[in-house]
Image (cartoon, rainbow, N blue to C red; front, side, top):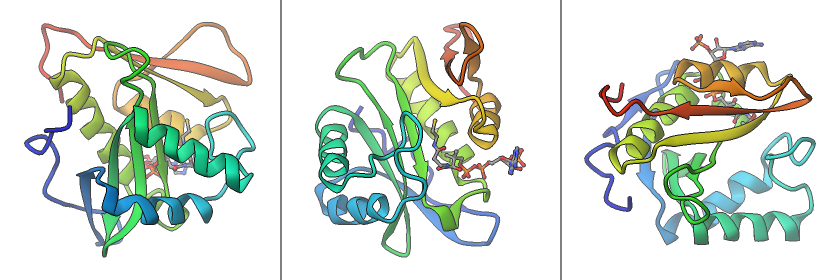
Amino acid sequence: MDDCSHILPSGIIDAHGRTIKFLAYEESYYQGLREMYDTFEPKGVEAGLPPANEELRHKWIDMMLSSFFNIVAIHNEIVIGHAALDILVESGSPEYLIFIKKQFRYCGIGTRLSETIRRIAKDVGCKRLWLNVRTGNAIAIKVFKKVGFRFTGGIDIQREMELIFDRGKKSR
Ligand SMILES: CC(C)(COP(=O)(O)OP(=O)(O)OC[C@H]1O[C@@H](n2cnc3c(N)ncnc32)[C@H](O)[C@@H]1OP(=O)(O)O)[C@@H](O)C(=O)NCCC(=O)NCCS
């Protein structure tokens, strides 16, 4: 999964004309990723968001970097987004996480990053991706539905969504 450079777009232009690069995580982005999460809003008000407590937040970042497959979104050398697949727990059916810095939301970056992750997951043979999302998080739900996620299970404050790969079809 580390060699996904053939799938990553060389650069995308967001709705404000900003050039954004999607790159496989490397240690040189560590400080930038921490800074993104230290200033991230909102924190910890719902499951899946970065913990509000600094120590827990830094442990949470380190946990993702040690056991997840990570892509960073970069603008002018600054980390403005992060997407991750939990490949350690279950490589064929990993959990998907995505976070975009506030000033860069609603500009198409989350959709393009999710499409990219979808292609990578399909390329390495994942059968399914899944995630938990708050039912009121309409924007996240819209993005996830656009790239093929569907709700599973019953209606609750938080719901699981999944994307099942059809082996017969090519990824979008
Ligand atoms: C959720 C998130 C990853 C989406 O990324 P993004 O870059 O903001 O999303 P995009 O710009 O690609 O797409 C947003 C979509 O929501 C739409 N949208 C904007 N405001 C909306 C609203 N109030 N209600 C519904 N849809 C809305 C946009 O029109 C766009 O859809 P379109 O492309 O069909 O027009 C990002 O907003 C984020 O990091 N949010 C905070 C953290 C989070 O919620 N993470 C997910 C936890 S499960």
